Length: 80
Image (tube, rainbow, N blue to C red; front, top):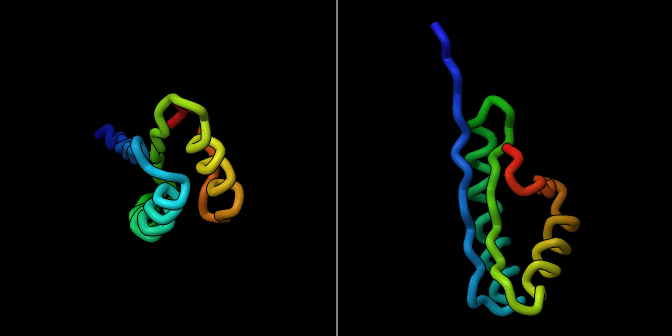
């Protein structure tokens, strides 16, 4: 029997957030993502963090947040 497992990619939308709001939301969600990852065979879960367009402030905030959190890695867009 073929027992392929497919991982669900979660979207986390930060549109309309200030930099401080975005960090607070990411910090709050990190424990949820960590708990979910611990239940996976690979101990990982893919999450697409959506920052929107504009002046790239949120993108930079998210990039710094990823770098400071050891449990988080930057996954190239479209890579599962």
